[in-house]
Length: 212
Image 1: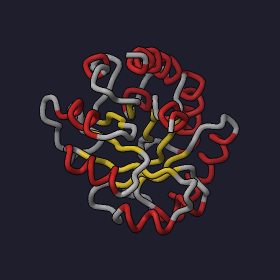
Image 2: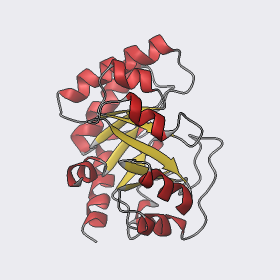
Image 3: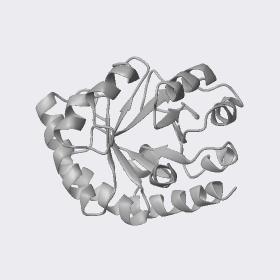
């Protein structure tokens, strides 16, 4: 599990509106800056576009030995042999996903309270994504965690927890003592003027959390 914890320390989530060529460029720069995992998040793309994008990213990430996680779509994750899949509370249940994917594929579940976290752990999730920890424009329907909830959730489970939602280098220090093993980043890297430098700054901050 320690290897998974290491892989989740700086978890980049893609921005759907960015064209593939530019996306690959940003991701490669971010990896060079310290990103340890990439989640391909597509909410509006049809299956063919999603698959083609996933395949391209899988090839890119393989050259750096960085795991690819697919958001929601079990079929896409299987088709490109992704290392992981991330599901939300309204997606196919975790128990069903576990029957569909190989044992080697890591499964993450989005949670926003202790009860959801405990259920995810009990049903065999490999890690949880906890949020939204800060206001975010990426996910319009995301609800904010109550004050102190992140730490309570991290303390309630033994599996790795990744903070998600509006995380930037400016606010990441506020949650470093919560027990998270990683931070999921979208805009702070995807929309940065220099994605490599942005990743480097966030990575340094996360490393202080890991030794706390």
